Every structure is written in C-alpha cells, then in structure tokens.
Length: 327
Ligand SMILES: NC(=O)c1ccc[n+]([C@@H]2O[C@H](COP(=O)([O-])OP(=O)(O)OC[C@H]3O[C@@H](n4cnc5c(N)ncnc54)[C@H](O)[C@@H]3O)[C@@H](O)[C@H]2O)c1
Image 1: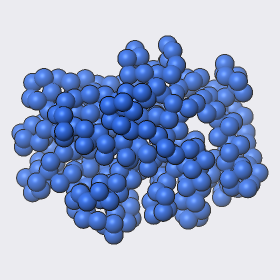
Image 2: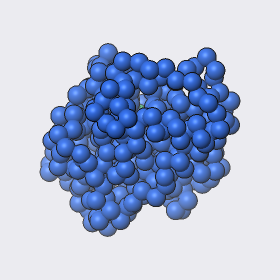
Image 3: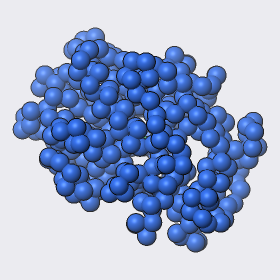
Image 4: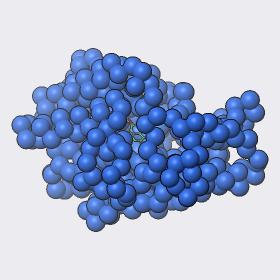
C-alpha cells in the first residue's frame, strides 16, 4: 500500500488519483487542517482508499498507521505552505514541517519502511544566481517555509546514510490546474496562488485581482514563473516511486515545464479563456519575490523519464472549470 500524507490537500489528492488509476491501494493520512473530507470522498469513488484523520505532530498517530497497514512507500505532502505566513509565524512552520517530518521518518525507520517521495520546492534556491535553475544551483532559501523544505532534504540525506531510508526529493515549481474531469481541484483557504486568485476575481466582483510589482527586470516588468500542471505533477510522483522501487537510490529532481510565463501573460490567457474582462490593480512589489524563476528539468527527463505535457492554457482552463463548479 502507498501512504500519502497530506492526501486530502491539493497536490496529494491529484497524486492519489494517479496511483489509484494505476491499481494501487492508497492510505491517506491528513489532519484536515487545510485538506477537505469532500476531496477524500471523491477519491473513494475512484479506487481503494483508506482515510486516517491524524496529525504528524503526534507520533502515535502515524505509528498506528504503520502498525495497522502494510505500507510499502510514503509520498509525503503534509505540511504548511504559505510563504508570507511562515515569515510572520516561523514557529508554526518549524513545528509542523520539521517535527512532523521527523516523526514520520522515525516511524518509517522503526517500522522498516524504506522508501519515500518528498514534496520539496524551488523556494529552497532563494534568489536566483542564474536561470534556468538546475538542481546544483546554490541553496539559500529566503523565508522559513523554504528553509523547512531545505532542512527536510538534509535530514533525508542523513537518514539515508544512517538508516538506509531512500528518498526522492521533488523540487516543484508553481503547480496549477485541476483534475481533467474536474472532480477535484485547488482549494486553499486563504488562497495565495496566482491563477486561482485571478479566476476568483471573475466570480467575486468585489475581489479585484492585484499585480505586485511592474518594475522587475523582465520584458513586461512583471515576475516570471514556471507553471506545471497538477496532473503532470501527480505523474512525476508515480514515476519517482517506480524509479525508487527499481533502483533503491536517493536523488533529487526539479519538476517544472522549463518555460517562464509572466504575471501579465497569465492574466491575458485567463481573460481569453474565461471570455471576461478582469479588473486589475497594480501594487508595489512584495518582499522576497524573485524576478525570474523557471526550471531546468533535464534531469527528470533523462532519469525519471518524466516530461511536462500540459500547457498553461490547459491548467488555466481546468482551474477555471473547477472554480466555476464551486461558485
Ligand atoms: N502548491 C504548490 O504550488 C507547491 C509548490 C511547491 C511545493 N509544494 C509542496 O507540496 C505539498 C502539498 O502542497 P498543496 O498545495 O497540496 O498544499 P495543501 O495545503 O493543499 O495540502 C497539504 C495537506 O497537508 C495536511 N497537513 C498539514 N499539516 C499536517 C499534519 N501535521 N498532519 C497531517 N496532515 C497535515 C493539510 O491538511 C493539507 O491537506 C506541500 O508540502 C507544499 O509545501 C506545493
């Protein structure tokens, strides 16, 4: 069985669909602090899903899972994800992301579970020294969220050396879009990501979309990011798992499209897809936003045989249909 921590959340639930479609039985472990039982109920209609409501900060909760289920591999998404909140309240992030992960890893070691795929992030690179970013780019995360992810990567390296726990760390770029059948989609409260916020402003007329910073050193002055479709991202986890199972080696991969798209470009594509004029307000830059972040994903292509397939238009379209279904 595959254990998915944080499987009631956005990326974990889309990944669960890929594993279920491939015939795996899945155990979802989530405290539902930011995940949704409605999402789990959709997954239960797709395949064999066991849901455990538990918190990684309580080691007994996760110990019980390993005692009660025959877990082969863990796909670890559970954690807090908001950069700005992590700056204001680092304790919340270190306690959940670091202590929660340590409890999970210790429990895996004591229960002889030796394979894990971990959700890392391009935020661990910090301010880019060069782009596109490859896996060897210096790691200098500039906020507590990114630091927790970098520390967890380092902990996993040490656990491999000492306890033979093998890990694949996937460094995600920006994840976007919804399930191709619109059964599930991005559902964060509050929502801090660009695409769902643009789309929300279509449905909520008092929710004007804001662009932070138009004076960056980019062709149109707005930030450039790399938007990977959530279905492609989910597939990266299945391929990482298969690679890990076959080779039993630890490694790290960027998961991105290798294409940079500016905020203004995303906004224009959203106007076209939604056939709506979207009001926008221009604000000052936010601190900590790098001008340009996009991936060199050659390593994932050559070793994992993973490649991004869907376009940003695909992601905005499914995200729009998902938002529409919720309004
Ligand atoms: N969304 C992105 O663009 C993006 C980019 C880079 C990395 N990531 C990483 O991917 C992972 C998933 O992101 P997401 O967007 O799906 O977030 P999400 O908030 O939708 O999902 C995280 C899930 O983890 C659960 N959780 C949190 N702490 C827990 C705990 N202590 N015990 C049990 N469950 C807990 C939450 O309830 C939630 O369901 C995160 O680790 C995030 O850092 C996301």
